[in-house]
Image (spheres, protein in one colour):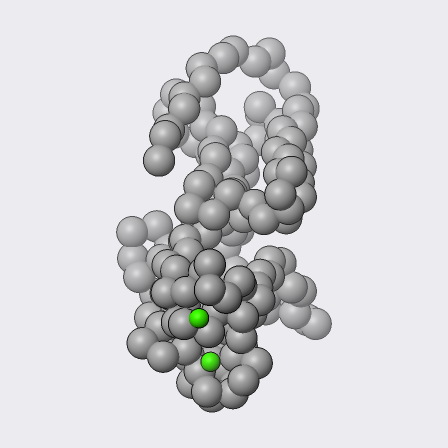
Length: 165
Ligand SMILES: [Ca+2]
Ligand SMILES: [Ca+2]
């Protein structure tokens, strides 16, 4: 994996940062962040479909926490789909989703997705279309440096709730 750092100066103001993905499958394993010299985050992300457009102001720090979702597949990746929901609001809002994956290309793949979330409560749901779970697979969620979810996937699917603060 290659990391690229692009330093630049901005006048105070409002800006838009856009990322596009021509394959419609986001940055699997990758991420981006825009921060100042003190490490304050303005924008971060990495998980999206065809594009991710973020607005930010140089005068307001966004309250964002880096979160990693990791999914381990088995030899039937075509059965697996997943989604992450914001459950701080009612009704819950689906933020991100993925799958089904490609058999056999994604057999036993370990997929890492980096996302940035505001403080709140979130649900992660991993479904299995055949109804027999993911053999020796599962998922984890890490908030900052702390693993807050480590789950197998049983039957038609498993879910877990986690808090970002
Ligand atoms: Ca297979
Ligand atoms: Ca299965």
